[in-house]
Structure formats: C-alpha cells, structure tokens
Image (cartoon, rainbow, N blue to C red):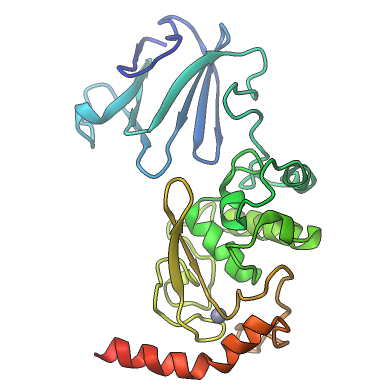
Length: 285
Ligand SMILES: [Zn+2]
C-alpha cells in the first residue's frame, strides 16, 4: 500500500508499506485485511460506494464525500459516503467485535443454508419481523431491501410476521429463494426477480400497481430502525405463517391454488373486488 487516507476513521490506521492480504465482501460489508492484522470494515448501507481509479483520473464524486482512499501501485480505491468506516485488529478476520460473526454469503455458490437456519434458531429477538430478519447480516449476507420484498412475495410470506411464527420449512424456503434470486442476478445489469412482472420486479417499487400473481394493489410500509420500505401484496401474503401453495400456469404465472384458511385472509379476499374498484376510482380521480 502506497497511501492511506480516512479522515473520519476512529481506530487503528493501517501503515503505508504494509501489504493488503485480503479483501472480502459480505453483502454490503467490505473488509480489507493487512499483513499486520489490521482490518478495515466499511458498510455501504444505502449511500456508500467504492470506486477504482488510475492515478490522475477524475473522480466521479466530489472530494468532500470521500471517507477512505487506499493507494497501491497504479490504482486507487476510493470509498464515498459509507456511513460505517472502522478498523480493528483481528486474530480471526471473520470476527467483528460489534456484530459477531456475519452469516454465510448467499450470493456465493453452495451457501451453507443450514448454518443460516441455526442462526435463525439462535436469533435473540423472537418478535423481530421476518422482513428485518432477512436483512440481518448475522444470519446471512447478500439480501438487500429489494430482494427482501421480492423473496417474501415469491414465498407468500407476510413480511410483518415475527420470526417465531415462521416454521422451519418456510424459513428454509425463504433462504433458498434468496440465494437463487441473488445468484441468478449475479451477472445481470438489470435485476430480475419476477420475469412475469413488468420491469422484472413483482412488488418492489410498485406501490398501488397490480400484483402480478393476484391483481390486488401492492402496498408499501416503512419499518425498522432505518425506515426501509417493505412492499407486499396483502392478498398473496396474507397467510400468517405457512407459505401459500402455488402453481405455475402454462403462461408462466405463479398463482395460489388454495384459498387461505385464515379468517382475516378470507374476509380480505371477499372484499377484494370492492377494494379494487375503489382503487381504480382513486387512480382515475
Ligand atoms: Zn398478490
């Protein structure tokens, strides 16, 4: 390493002349490990990004947004706007003093789903909604806000149900579906999680538009510490804990094959036509 700058870093600064041994990403976490055991951890959340530049190349973001700059021969890696920049000295690079071990990366081939399930079993807050649990990097890495909504919709699971209400089999399906969606998008420029939906996404960003499975209007709600948006279909995802049974029609559409037995869901379905009409009026007005 030929240069290191991190104006806001409150922790050990890696030394110029040291060798960067390893760079690893876990979802939106990125970790650099130097040969003297110093580890730099950045978390992108919604705002951060890393860029690579040649010497003298013009940056695509202003200097004041830089939080880390790491120079090596012929390259400079610059991180902009990451809310988390911290460093620590590690004997085990996978261990972080703040959040403990991070879970398996679902973007990689053959992720350890059983380990993710174990982590869910040991989850400290049994009342945490499933939408938040899927984003929790201590269980698995890779699921961001878009995939969270799309995976829950595909599996027919209500995003606001607590983890304790979701059975083991459904948890496994959610994790396997997450891994499948992440992997199938690994080399795509435009994310596609629901080929049957216009734009390739079933619910994310489609507030008020028809659900590609049942036609009900997609809803949005902001929850959790960071007020992240969760999009869901109130009909397909009314099922409390058990996943909806679905079939694939000859045209490739996935639709429920059994009416939901939950009384609230049954009432919801009875009122659906009425609500759709009201929505159509509102949209037309
Ligand atoms: Zn639906």
